[in-house]
Image 1 (tube, rainbow, N blue to C red):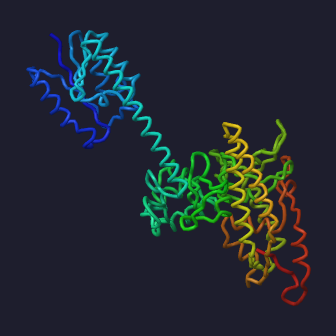
Image 2: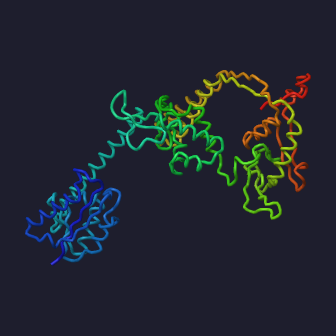
Image 3: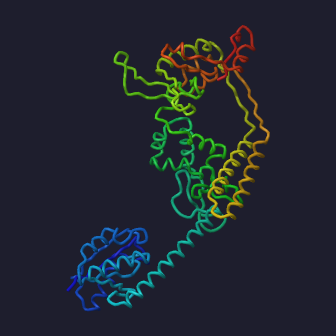
Length: 478
């Protein structure tokens, strides 16, 4: 005589699925009614396991049951959906059980596989259950699409810096800025844009590496709703909720451009690499950090190097030891400008409207291009092409908006040398680039023989336009 093997499963402990305890009660009661000994039952249970995502043989106790199965055994389950969620998996389970010389019984469905009629009914019921699951999934997808179009929040936790609240205009939830976390997130994004490592920034706000990376690429930062690889659009125009936007469209584009730069094994922030230009391509240099040190001086052999993104294949790039370049450039710069007045430039930007319009149009164009590339039918392609043309026209119109910007120059009351002494690496780079381009050439000679300054024409005009007892040396705009 075979063994009765009872299988139970739940993905979530709900009234619909029934807890493990409730499934045990139903199976035990059915065995008592049938005149069988409950104490002789071998029990198997898979908890927090999805029936639709994990096949029976891939579940811990499902696999154990199959391994224990012998001729004459009876496998008892409360309902079909506790064993399988699709026809193929169900038929595979039944086939394997019968191949072992055993049978399967579904208590609540009153089905067993001891005869051909039972197997037939089992197949029909499983097919109907699979159809129902497909219809439910399709309705869920349609609901999610509707939620996205309306700007409502359907599933998942709101990203850091945001929170979900009741929709003031109707049913469901909407995403809004979290008054406590949003300022912290905006500050964190600013630190990243200033060159601080993402790892240091995300640790300071308690986020995981993956979570922070995804958040920086999340269009919700600009009030848009994610939709796969793109964003939700209405008539081809990205749907934007200004009340849920942490960044303006121009800030979002700037962040996207910043994050889109290629990964580098060298540092962006340390030293004056950003102020040095490659003689070959004109690109900025980066600090390549070395672990080796000079045994005499104790200095590392860090170098400024061009990453050769614009070089021809096989073309070399100039490099120089960092401390040699730092010492020469500082000496040269302060010798030329250290005694000059540090001038402050106050820029009054009245171009915000145009920048916002251009950024929004760029996002619209990008989304239209994505939809055109993904078009599966001629109708979809024609609609996408129309949206693409409209997006291009919108971008052209935005770019033609008049720009208004004025600059007011004032004396800071300090010398350039005084400002330099208090400046960090980034601020010193800005000072150096005010003077012009510092170009690094090939060779093994001294820094003086390899680094040349190409002065800025506007700087020359500023330095020579004023004459007087105190201001006879002109000034440098910082």
